[in-house]
Length: 300
Length: 294
Image (cartoon, rainbow over all chains, first blue to last red; front, side, top):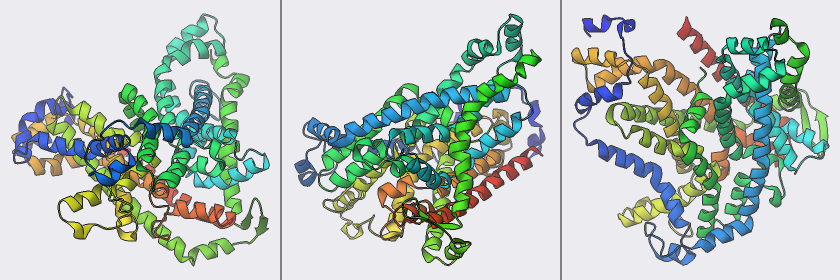
């Protein structure tokens, strides 16, 4: 390849991201395919199905039968949304809210406390317990499904929201503890020492010093868990059987099963209702969502 | 300060709740599941000890092996698809796009956060054939390729590809961002010295980019396989495992065995087989991570 490559990497003094500087040689990479064509194709592939979903949700049934798929709706058939909402999507939406947010709260509180105890405080079994939590990340949910069903059945919790709240909280702990421990690692011990010297008790150190310092991490973990829990299907499908307690994913599944073949408009409206919250959260917080979801995957 | 950090009671208060709920809801059921494998029955009908019968049945069950093959095939195809396209996207983000890069990255990432059932409902309509043509069949009709119009979701072969396409479509943005982060970590000087040596285009990618990206590429592969082995939502919502059981992965097979057939023992056995597969893949991660460091 040439002698220049034997230059060791540590001789490089700057680590600016390449894209600003190497754009000038992009032309050599491929025979001048205009970038914008590639990008346009990409965006069409990614966004068009979603746009089609939205537009179709505003069409009436005759429009589906008579006009071609790409035509714009002739008016805004809001009744599709009304029908979807009243035929169940409203209930499902509410149930998801009632189940996901309490779980999120519990997860944040428990993982905050546990990670503090595991990362900042000192005791013999620190690492063992941390490892036990980490092991949970790799277990497929199917391993706990049947015993949980039995446990809830015998406790009379089947077909209640509690079954979901308990399950969601527990299942979110491994990853949350792992991520939160990482955040606590970055809290300088000197700040904690200063607080102690000022006469703070360990609980005061926790609430007034440590927690504010990982506030950013709380948001990240909250977001990661929000998406996993809001989009849960398996647990909701297993533990909930009556229609008025279904959450958004199982509800939509049921809804599409009932209306899918007959009424396309409300079906699309239903899917759009399911998508809407995640869309809003994503619009506002997308950079943190992306960072959070990718940080939770590759360790490190 | 040392004494305060070692305060046993405080540690209990902090770690206790999480550990308790985790043990009861996660750890105990895992052991319980393994115990179930030597029983048969259900919560409603009662349980009976059957020894290793479930394991014997597993090995001779053609539906199990069909589901196993489907799971592996799906994992491989979708992994190659999402990581491969993710890599292409990352290269695009770094080398082709300047200021528009963050916006494009964010847009392409969006499908990752959507509820899987909504995406499946969407794709069902895209590939529909009755009562009216969906997106794909309409398009084929319009460009006079009517011979290609078919019940995409009603045939085992094409149904597999629809599921795969749907999941690759959804997740490619995720791997695009992941690999982009890896690419950005490569110092610009490396590209410049290689360029001085006359490397460009494909050779640049093959001899410089790929070797430097190898650790993250490998981690992405493993992470993807781990996730795709456990596919459940997409398949359930799109084809429900059909036609027949042609698109049934192990997760769905386990689910129907346990809840439709009331065979908790056999279902647990399938779940255990799945867990072993995932564990095996996870061990590969740790092996490869150790090799990187050492």
